[in-house]
Structures are given as structure tokens and as C-alpha cells.
Length: 378
Image (cartoon, rainbow, N blue to C red; front, side, top):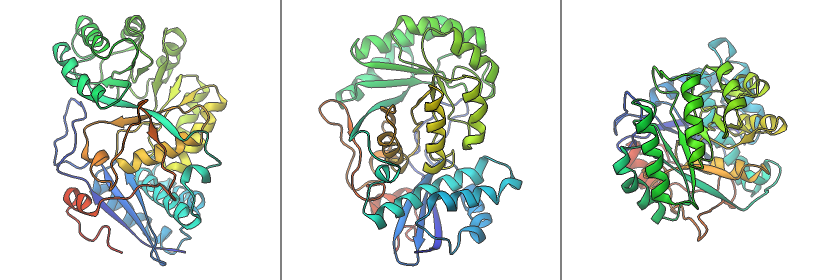
């Protein structure tokens, strides 16, 4: 079974706000779907955290390398694509695009073998996992209106991020966290994401340490992205001094980029994004390297339903990965699948057990958000 072609289709029309200082608009594309089509008619699907123009450009570069390759060897094929494009620079659009290809190849391997991806990764440690609802921060007086409808959906774990936090003053930061804790109550998990990868993030180590101490008073589970993406030395110092776990890593790509952060002890929780980092093959290596260093591996998941499915399978294959991120309110998560995601009575998501990624895309929904009638054609 060989790769015949790879298609890309950008999602537009309902792109959710990201909280960035230069905010994205609904018609902007930041997520692109991938379809790997085989010569035997099997199609695997993946997702890329990159604009579709960049993905198509990357596919043009990669096409001579993947055309005709065995579609049931995801790790080997993906590594070939990485190895043959070092000269273009590790990371960026090429690596992001390989991520989507790799996810789709694992989907194909699962379909061909009749097994869910998590089992192919070595076995399933769990059949369900707790998702945390990922929502943007707002003014303190509006946090209850933001969180209570999400809690009513059954979520019992919440991550609030970006918005005014770290961008105004300490009183506003604490007021937002206090309002969130009061809204969800003492029995729900609360995590805080400062959004330090925002453009021109101005807060440094001392702000992060003061803020970490404040967050600990509100029983915050972890403090995510409190510093700029390249502040390795300060991340390591903060992890040593902070009274709560420090999380990050969503901006890094490939295992080689994570190595110095793991070696420096910069994170308590490492958060690679499967749609950017190199796909399932690469994220599995990062997860094991982190686990062996005593660092928790919890995937970053601000992407699509296919990214969420990949995260669920990765969570099933790691004994310590007991959380996944769920971007609430996005049709790219909730509306493009034929069978909607459902939380159980305990606020958990079942890990798909059908072959491959175990999710079926809704062709009409995909057409609505991509405008591409050929994307899912057999």
C-alpha cells in the first residue's frame, strides 16, 4: 500500500479567537487538514497547525520524497521527510506539515491492521481520559459567564489563559483567578496559561515567580507559558523556585528542540503539540524522554478534532498522561466529526477504540469550513 497523493485543505469561517495581541479573525486559516491517499483507496487524515498556503508549499517540496512510499510505515516515512529537509531548517512549515502527514499515516496503519492507534503505540493504559476545557480569560466580572456554561457541559477541569492576564497589573491578574475559582468551585481543577508566546511578551522571571506564588493560593494545578519561549535559563530557575508546577513547550518542534529543556529541568509538565512537533511518531519520543526525566507529558491541543483524537491515543499509550486539552466552542473540534464528542458522567472522554484514529469526518462540515469538494473524494 503506497502513497498516491497528499491533499491539504485549510479551515476557515469559524476560526476561534486565540487571545493573541494581534488577534486572528474567523476567516483566517491557522489549521489545515491533511488527507493521505493510497493506491489501494485507503485514506488517512491528519491536522497541521499552520496556514494552508504554507502547507501546500511544504507539500510541493516534500512530494518527491513521499510519493510512492509505503503508507503503513509512519515512523520511517516521517523520519525520511525530516532527514531530507534538514537543509531547509528544522521546525516551521516543513516540520508542521510532516506532523499532519505522520498523523494520517498512523491513521492508515490502524485502518489496515484493524487496531486503534494507541494500541499500535504499544498498548493502552486507559480507556478514558479527563479533558480540561481550554478557555480565554476575560475581565473578572465576566469570568463566571465564561466558565459556568462550560461547567454545565460536564467539564470538571479548566484552563484559563491569555486575555488581560499579565498585560495590565497584579490586581487584575489576581481578580481574574479569584473570579474563576469562585465560579467553578473548590472541587474543580484550575490551570492558568499566561500566554508567554504572545508577540513581544514583556513579563520576566520576577513577575512569573510573584505570580506563581499568588496562583498557589488559589490551588492552581499548573502555571503555563509564564515566560517568553526562548527563556530557558529563567524557566529552569522558575521551576526550582515556584510553589506549583510549571508547564510549557507548545512552541518547540521535534525532539532535538526539547532535549536541552528536558536536560535543564525547565518544565514540570511538557506540552508538545502533535500538529506541530512532527506528529505522533515524534511526540511519542518526546513523551518518553520527558517521562524518563521525571517530567509529566500532557499534550498541547489547541487544534482540531483530528489533533484531539491523536492526543487521546497518545494519552492511552502513556501511563502518566491523564489529561488532554479540549478547545471548547470550536466547530473545528465539535462540528467536523460525524459523531460528536461526549463527556461521561465523570467528565471524562472515551478514547476511540475503532481502527486508526477512530474518528469519522463529516464531509458536509468539512466542505463548509474548507470550501474544497475534492478534499475527501475517494
